[in-house]
Length: 115
Ligand SMILES: [Cu+2]
Image (cartoon, rainbow, N blue to C red; front, side, top):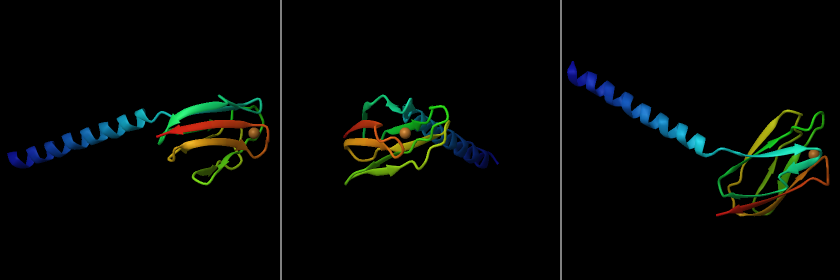
């Protein structure tokens, strides 16, 4: 019986370690928050590393927003964003991009993704 107990114990230890690593990875990938308030992206310019996440938050009262990016190497489309909602985008390709809003043409966000 002792060997079988040890085996179960060993498995549990492994599960705890793997679980801890996953939790750590999630914490390490804290998104960069982009506010969309007063019909502006805030900040208007951001530098991130490839693989990092931008979180587009619509904190603009009653207004809809619709963040999107269209380029040769990378694109996304948040769809219409209701007030209070958020949309996460992982920038998986390095480059210099301009994110626009499909509803407010003057809204622009410069995203510089380094390798
Ligand atoms: Cu907008």
